[in-house]
Image 1 (cartoon, rainbow, N blue to C red):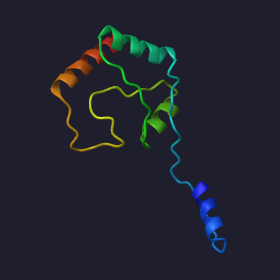
Image 2: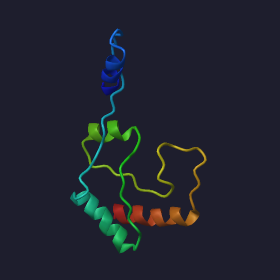
Image 3: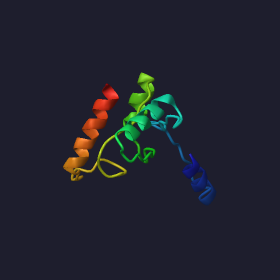
Image 4: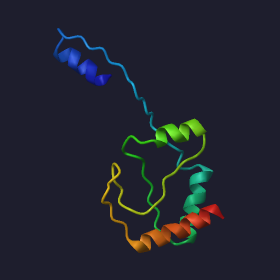
Length: 107
């Protein structure tokens, strides 16, 4: 609604009626949670470099994780991109590394 306020200030003669039809709230987990600490421990055990970041774009996790009420992280190889990229390139050795990490998480 900040955009509407700005437009009203700039063009007071105009009226705006805004309706949000697809509200996707941000989804976050405390980086000090036991869930995150467990994943970090697995990274350390496997001697993998751990880089934490948030999701910089709207995605289905904001609906799925909140509706299920479960902790959620995205782990995987590939670039830290803002949206799905059909021609993303991932090195085979990174896929192998992540398969070891996924196995350790499951066990």
